[in-house]
Image (cartoon, rainbow, N blue to C red):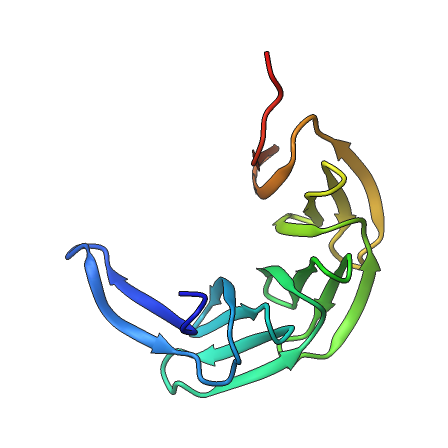
Length: 168
C-alpha cells in the first residue's frame, strides 16, 4: 500500500480485508508499520517522517525524523528508526523528540531489539551492527557474506534475511 498511503486491516479468521485505514497526514510512501497498545506507527519514506495513529480515535501526528526512515522498532520507552539515506539510527520519544542519533554505517535498512541490544542491518556494507539500546553506542559488527535486508531476534538467536547469495 505504499502508493495510496493506506493500511489494510485483515480478518485472519475470514482471510479477507475488512477495513482500510487511510493515512492522510503523509504525502506518500508508507514502508513499515509497527503497533504498541492502540497506537500504529508508520514510516513515511517520501516525506522523511514517522506517523503515529491512534487506532481508536483515528487521530494522527507526524514527526519529521530523517531521510528515508526504512524501518522502525518500538520499545515501551522509545522508537528507533533506521534512516537509510542519512546512514543513521535515531532514538526518539513517542512525541517525536530525538533522544540520540548514531551515524551507523551505510544504508541501514532493518532494526530489531533484543533486551539491551539493538541490531541494525546494513545493505551496502553487508553487516549487522550491534548497538547499545540505551544510548546508541556501537558495540560490535557482524560481517556477513550476503546482503542483509531484514533482522529478527529472539532469545539468543539472530535471524538475518539476505537478498543475494554466494555461488556454491
